Image 1 (cartoon, helix red, strand yellow):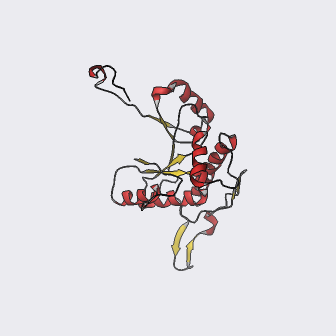
Image 2: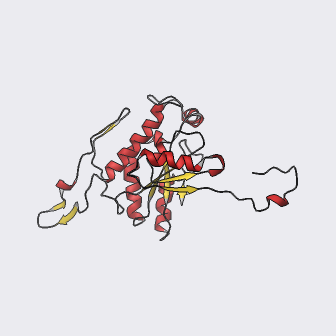
Image 3: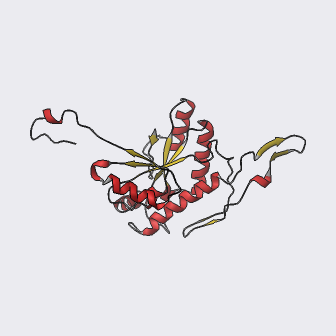
Length: 227
């Protein structure tokens, strides 16, 4: 289950995707829950700890849906929340690099705690084995993150990172994900999968096609629009 999130203030009461995902996690037992985060507008440290916490609540069923803003979507975002100091121009390569940096930081923070870092040793009065916590020392073009995380290593180690690929987008963000959602009616699926797959041959990816089938197409009256 994926839960998309927004970037603007909600009218009235509402929960962001991660909060709703935690409620769903506590109320379910089998489904994988993948909340979205508008990463161009959020601190990567907070995104990482939020997804790690969800992985504990769901007992290893969490994922992270990377929602990025490029082109016209970035323009609409700026109109909704106002201009932000340092926010990259719409359509720029800096927007994509910002997203890739966020994914790197989120993954790095998940790995900043080794397995077995929480020892709860009464005799030595130590809760943690400090030698199993590590800085990530990330330095990107837009931000720096020292680490380590304030949340222990998630039960999965590395929760699933997913994103949606839209027609005409640069495939670099999709290349950084574990799961890529596609809309095949407007894509050359074979070439796209080949392009994304060769970007990082060491990463195993799953491609999920969002297919819409109109079973009544032949019986539809002429002149009636098909969506």
